[in-house]
Image (cartoon, rainbow, N blue to C red; front, side, top):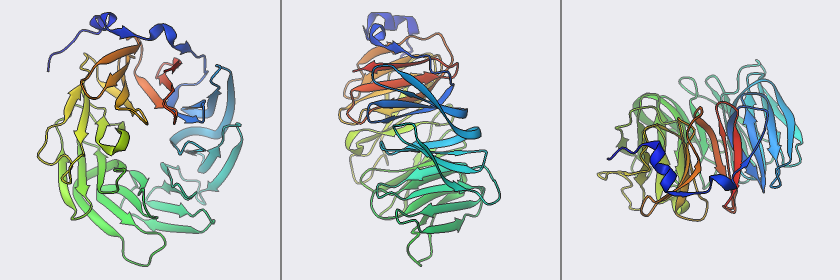
Length: 338
């Protein structure tokens, strides 16, 4: 794959002059949209809410470090080193959902469409249903990632040497998917047919859930810290290389025996990916602060933010796909009406 100098992107289509710069006052580890309000979640204590008009308000959500965050577009749930699981709505209202009895760090959170949510502290995973019923599961090692299946109340719990699939409402023994190594982030494909983890080593691992067949997805120069499913679940875009790596999931075998697409090469590593919710385009942020919008069909690029700063650490579209927000490790942030 040909390497391109970042300066060459000055000649491609550019939307940099349409980006609204935002003084959010936090270093964002994530950004989520609640309607058309962008919520930048900081590393410590606070989140910044930004309206479509650019009005900024800051709200305290934890009494220390914010370790994990997720959103379903209606609410944001976060976990902190204060042992609390907290939810935030678009009005800036904060509610404590749970407090760990031992005040352990909350390492992972996940949301289910029916109102259920999950969190983990050390080896223990918790699920609270939409009706308030709480169940727990002790994993064989520290929980590395949590995800709800898109259908049914099933939770994937990533940990050392594999993933446990747990049905909190069933007495049946949880299913164990084994693969040596430390498994961190975990995600189900939108069609519920595949499960993929990001590992501590520079690789992904996947399983076809119909028969638990393995899918080795390796070749990355660095760890994969960001994953995003394209519209319809046709591909899984990932960070971790100096191009956007997109694994194909259009067939019953997923990426088995297939090469991934490699788009938007740069002399910097991809740090964040966010696929558009309705179109076959995506946004990618890089370790040098560059933000690109990329057409998946042919790799055509639009420049959103030029290089010259710390890595992009937060990137998200709103549900309509009309707003894109980003944040960087040195506290810069912006929003583009697309």
